[in-house]
Image 1 (cartoon, rainbow, N blue to C red):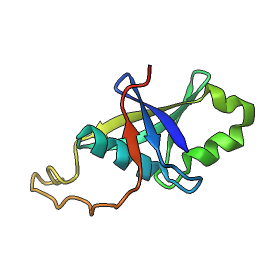
Image 2 (cartoon, one colour; image 1 turned 180 degrees about the vertical axis):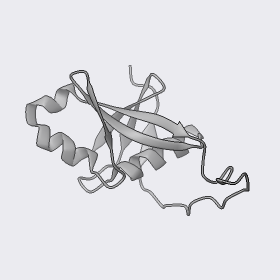
Image 3 (cartoon, rainbow, N blue to C red; image 1 turned 120 degrees about the horizontal axis):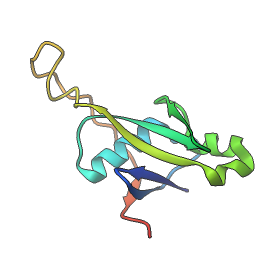
Image 4 (cartoon, one colour; image 1 turned 60 degrees about the horizontal axis):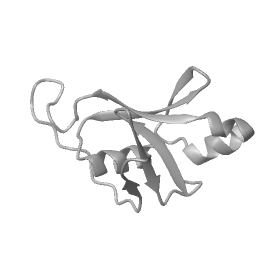
Length: 111
């Protein structure tokens, strides 16, 4: 399955999702595809209300629970800060988080 996600005002399509794909998986795939580093969250926007999804939430499960309202949902990738691997809390260089092997692909701009 696929999921449309707004990234800096541009719609990206994340392909290869299953019902068990987590928000963290989606965020990592988008960050890798765009070459961006930093800390990100995935937000769900519906009818002017926005909610931050936690890392282990499943975006496709969220959509299925919304029923007909799912067509009105927008997923938005938001940058929340610099990468933890860039500079540690005391100004030192912290080790980057371990790489996660993903089988997701991200398509370009959707017209």
